[in-house]
Length: 398
Ligand SMILES: [Zn+2]
Image 1: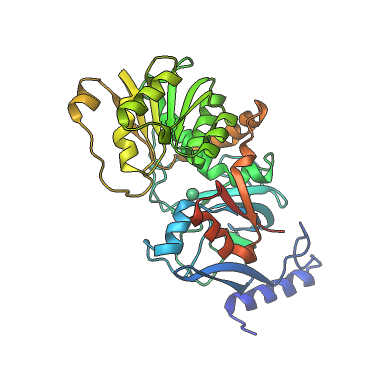
Image 2: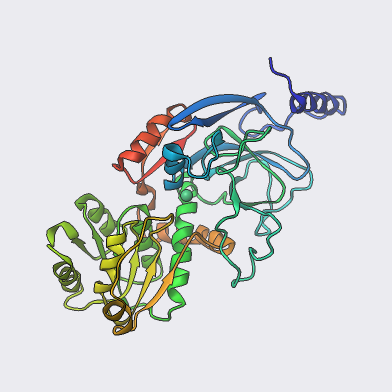
């Protein structure tokens, strides 16, 4: 057996605890095992299920038993190409689970809500002394570029990603008590936060109103959640654009009242007419661009009326250059454009309420999770993700 220092520390701590008459470990969902499993990406397209000694939980740390974690586009990029040079890495940042052990200094979550063993939690970014990312100042920057669990280099703790059965959330991390949300909703928090932020950005233009005609281009998980967020805000005149009938049907379930399949329209003029017809003869007041395709970016201006607005959020990573005609597309139409990327810490907390409201008005948010795999089948999960057949793929532990 590989006994390292943290292992010895844990044993000593347990012996001392038992001498004080305390139980060896708090029991939430059963006793904490001596080891934890981590799906470690050890080379391109290769996960290995590794077993590591359960780390010592420091005074500011929280040990979480992982219940599930969504597979993100970023994870798929790491799996295929390792663009961030992280291998070996424990991936998974859209995770959630139950607190099984807490350090003595941990009393509340990042929003001030009490925390106890048994609570369900999610994490957001890890603070690196960046005062411009805060919870309460609405004008602070987004968390882009900040450290997150699931995209950290491996270290001697190893429990750094949510594709695992335990994760050690260390002091200085943001953690939120989301015990009032079901597991599927909790797995969807991170991608939903991206849309809460995008809609907040869109609102800064002053163009997005209750009765606005809104076009959402791209009906992957991001576009579909965009439609749901707009619906929970009371916006009802939504047209969804995509090339797949199945996704367009889903867009209707999420709240779109008309759809346009771009494959049925030859050329951009015909497509723009298709969008106009779907709005009963009007162009859109506002557009959300939710694909990573440069051509889709070039096209979207044609869907927007003079004086309308655009939120571009499809290019989470560099997808190349797009061509537009500055005169026709922006100047002469006086289009107001905003870009959106990731979310602020405040948007993250807003997302919890959005998920409750979406359920409240009957939107089938949980249907976004089309595939669930146990940790042992993580390779399978990633292959399904790369085939682009489903929407959100999730690892769900037993
Ligand atoms: Zn993600």
